[in-house]
Structures are given as structure tokens and as C-alpha cells.
Length: 402
Image 1 (cartoon, rainbow, N blue to C red):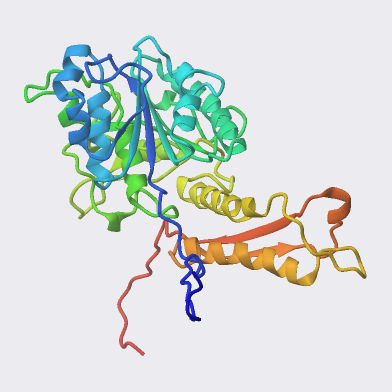
Image 2 (image 1 turned 180 degrees about the horizontal axis):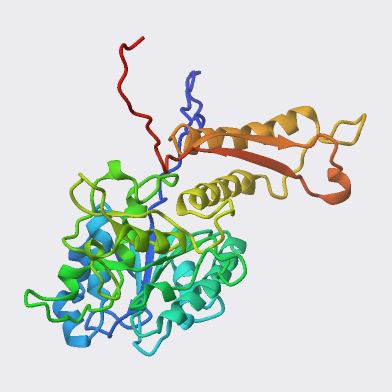
């Protein structure tokens, strides 16, 4: 039937270039466990609050009964991460070593990352069964896992549980050493815990003796923007009672010189600030030489976020035909501009406007021969946010304030 002539209005969306949904805090955990009534080893479990894990039977009693720390690590994560933050958990047998867990060709980490469809941006590995030297060795393997994940469009930061760090702290391996260190700029080793958890009221060791609160650090990272140091004082003290190292040493009992030495070697632990209540992380080190651009989590996360954004922008252009300038055979000026503006706009909306970087700019070489290469090359340069690690105040009396 022929309808009366009308003016039809179609409202379209997606034209304002709005920010993508923030998934920067999506996290994963691989840790020892025992199969329960509601899950099997190797399953990928997703929790958005501790109560959901407990509904699966993963409780404090579960940890004690099975001599594992799965509940403890999940609980630590939600002590610092906002409720609602997805935590992808893969419980594995107690015979699985840290080296097995982080193996880029193994059965665990790749399966978790692919099972989460690349959503995981922060990934923790927890094991108290490995010698501390094995933890340091695992950092190198974990960096290979990062490279595999990057090549598969899933860049992320990795946290390793530095359980049972040596009693002789001078024997700690130097993660910053350019020659002997693991050279792992996306891997952090956490060596702290809450002594109120590892010992009971009588000072007797509990099931959690020697563990490191790796998920407490990862949870804080999940709670803050990508450019933010997890040790930032303004973000508030950590929800713990008695900060300690995983060897049992109380932070209060260690001198500043000792803590400075551990800090210089690139480990993450807890510290106190004079005149400030509570404990805070010492920083957000990664296991690489200090001169690296990515010697901290807060330097590596923004770059990897930009990597994901750029791919989301340009994947839309794959196998598309583009206009060429008939006079030169190079990209038409309007095409070149579109490539630059689409990337600049996405970076501006999702990072610069969010205060995560100071700015970014895309450059496309107008002279590149797309006909010969079937490839468009672009360059994106980012100016990071600055970070205050030391404040020097010159203080004295004066006769006037002129």
C-alpha cells in the first residue's frame, strides 16, 4: 500500500566519539587451589566481589582445610579494588610451579587470557611453594608471557608473589641490575604482607605464613587510573594492620637504610610515612633497569592502554580501499588527515581528557607508497604525566616576606 508522503527522521549514534567503557582495572589471578563442588581446577571463574567467591565455596575455611591461599588472595584483591571490578580466577593444582603458571606456551596463563577474550589488563601469579630464587627466575619468563600477550593484542601488567623472601635481605636479587636482572619491564615482584594475617594473637604462624599480598597491590592498581602510582599517599592508607615482609620482618623493625636498599632493587613492599597513620606501598617498580622508560607500572600502563586504543581505531580500516592522489600516487590529503584525526580523537577522549597523559599526537608520512606496500604507517607520540617522587623545601627565618 502506498503511504502518504512523509519526512522521516533517523537518529544515529556513535558520532560524538565518546569514551570507551573503562576496563583498565580488569584483573586475573592464577593460584593454587583444590577442586570444589561448584568448580574444577583449570576453570575460569569470574568474581566481582568476595561474596561471589564464597558462594562458590572459596572461603577462609576452604583455605585452611586445603592448605591453600586462594580465598586469601581474592580477599586481598577486593580489599583495595572497587566492588564490581571483574577478577578472573583460575585455580590450579598445588603441584603447578610458578614457572608452569607463567609459561607462554603452557596450559594456564594463555588459557586464562584467551578465555577472558583479552579483557585482563592486570594479572597476578601466586605460589608459596617455590623458592624465592625461582620467583626471580619466573620474572624473565613472565616477560616472555607479556610479549606473547602483546603480539596477540592483549598487553598487560604482571604481578608475582614474592613469598618467603630471604631472611638476609642483603641477599635479595637486584631486579634493577642491567646485567643480572630479569629485564622484565611489565613484571612486578611483591614481597610484603600483613603480619596480623600471617600470625595469630599469640604470635603463632598461620596457614598464611610466608605469603606475599600480591593481590593487594594488584587491587590498588585496579582501583586507580593507569598513570597513577599505587603508592600515592592521597589515595589513602592500605587496609592492613601490621605491615611486614614475606620473611616475617615487621616494617617498623627495619631501618630506613635497609628499606632504601630493598627499594633500590625494584621490589614492591609497604612503608610508613612519619606523621601519617597507616601503611602505603613504596612505589610501583617493575623488574627492569631504572633507566628504562617502563621502570614503573605507571609508565607502562598508559602505553599499553594506548596500544589497545590504536588497534581499536585502526582495525576498522583493514582491507578498506583508500583514495590516492592521482598526481603523486600517495595517500590523498583527506585520507591522511582522517587517519591522524581518528587516532588523535580516540587518544584525546580516552586518555588526555581523563588526565592519564599530558597529550598525544599522530603523524602519518604523506610520502609513503601504499600501492607498493599495501601498508599505512603511522606514528603516535605521547607525553606522559609527571610524577613527584621527592620534594625539597628550603626553610629558614627572614626579616620580611618581600
